Image (cartoon, rainbow, N blue to C red; front, top):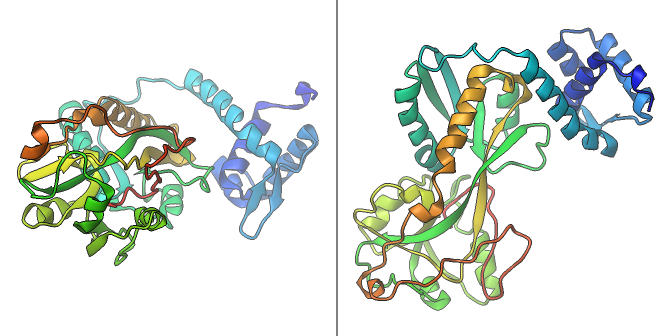
Length: 345
């Protein structure tokens, strides 16, 4: 490739086109006319000897070469922007800013609550607005500025959005304190005989992928309630014999009236990431918020959330924690599946 034929403006246009996947939207973002961006796209196709973007049902679809270019291109342009930007234009102690976060109520407890408390100390003029996480609307909400950040398991189909991994989460089984059937080393046969509460983010569902996995092993658990909220679950299990699999970070506060036990044959996990749009990527205040969330979650390892075995289990604590991996291997005899919504199991 003759690099003399490539100027910075062409690379900025390519980044906008690969992010928006629409010539009109890219033109608006760059404050250029649509014919001007179309002309630059033609030049880019000539330079890279590739169509880069091809017409699709909605907008345009990047070619394989374009997708290969996007990561290195963003990294190079980000370094250039960081060099050119002044870093003294955001003072947390004096700033007035509202950040809108889309998430589930589990994320409100695990991420947004610590963030809000930290902001009172570090940036008292920064407010947090929480919106219900709607996976079908999130991309558009981020694009038009209705939402600044999503905290969720990223959707591989939204590759044009920015993401940053925060943590991997696992599940713990909870029930009321001194529940007669909760103990360390609970077997799959004992597990399915319990009466379960699950959370259905879409509403009304009585099965999850864990039920499919149980069925494959010849088991069926008893789901007696489908709840709409994560935060409702600890309350109802604390006053009944119902149990629920919940994300471990939901129990960072004292367990109080609850017992929590690990399930040795269950190694299910899901990842949680920050997700944001290119439009807010370079905003100094938004960048500071993202870094603060990363800082706050980095020290919250799941090992800091102890299980609280019943009296029978206190005499014999488990020697090892449930198996973990990166999703590439499956341990024999363990149910291992991955959720994209962090729902109760």
